[in-house]
Amino acid sequence: MPAMMKAAIFVEPGRIEIDDKPIPEIGSDDALIRVTTTTICGTDVHILKGEYPVEKGLTIGHEPVGVIEKLGANVKGYHEGQRVIAGAICPSFTSYACQDGCSAQDGGHHAHGYKPTGGWRFGNTIDGAQAEYLRVPDAQANLAPVPDGLSDEQVLMCPDIMSTGFAGAESAGIRIGDSVAIFAQGPIGLCGTAGARMRGAGLIIAVDGVEARLEMARNMGADITLDFRKVDVVSEIRRLTGGRGVDAAIEALGLQATFEAALRAIKPGGTLSSLGVYSENLTIPLDAFHAGLGDHRIVTSLCPGGKERMRRLMQVIETGRLDLGGLVTHRYRLEDIVEAYDLFSHQRDGVLKVAIQAG
Image (tube, rainbow, N blue to C red; front, side, top):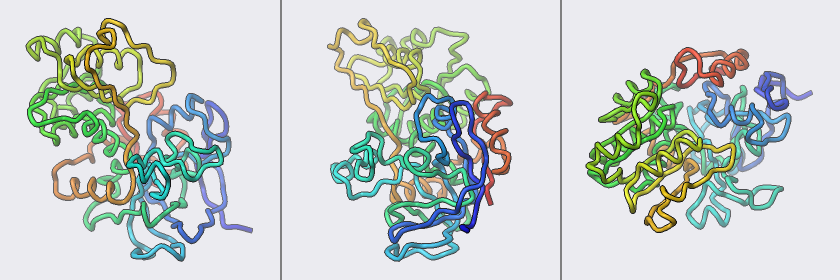
């Protein structure tokens, strides 16, 4: 009988439960890691609610920090016992999409054919990270050693949250001195704010309705914070930019209201960089779109993965450019993950990110 482990399994919409599963078998290009710390993502909540479809029985989660337990025969340059992370997106780097420079859309490994978002495998198309053990496919391309001296919690944001938030700033094409508005200051939006600062923005405006999140945004580099419950955000952004609008807006929630406000906040010729996961159709208002003649760029991003992306992000942490440890507000054991989902999905008790300790 195979050795068993605990895993958080999608049972049906509204139910993710902890259960026993066999420890994964690995192939010659894979690695098995013993997960020490992982977390719950907003996307996992979309899965829980049935808003993003995955197979029943799938292990959820895509943000692993752990230790190499076993290496496939083809995986060189690593050793058992080594501390590693793998990106939420773990592309093969052999597919057409990867070789075309869009590795997150890797389409080479799916029974469904060339599936969009195909580089996102953990907790989407294969068993994920909310478990005691995780099979990392194409491990040579995706395992990133954790620098000595960095804790699990210091690097826990690298696989997804930090990579995604930074991608929002990168896709926005922020230049030194640009004005940028970031809509929603959850974990992704906070990393978007930090990314805007690192890209050299001259004015950073963070928008949310929770004072604690706006305070965190100021720590991450926001010059001005706006509470959408108290001010007309678009009018205020216009006023702050001398009527021009911001050069770029980052949308980090996935709602019609934030998408539309971001579109209305940018200047003619500006960029709307969208990071939100949308669960219903979006409508683009005719006036805000300038009838299609506004020279706008609307760009979406799925977080870049792979070991080089992870190495770069961990280097930013290691050199003290950015400290994301403060995003972890709650800690749970893996066996209590159902309780953690309840807290996180209802956004209670000032939660930003939950560290799930699996080992």
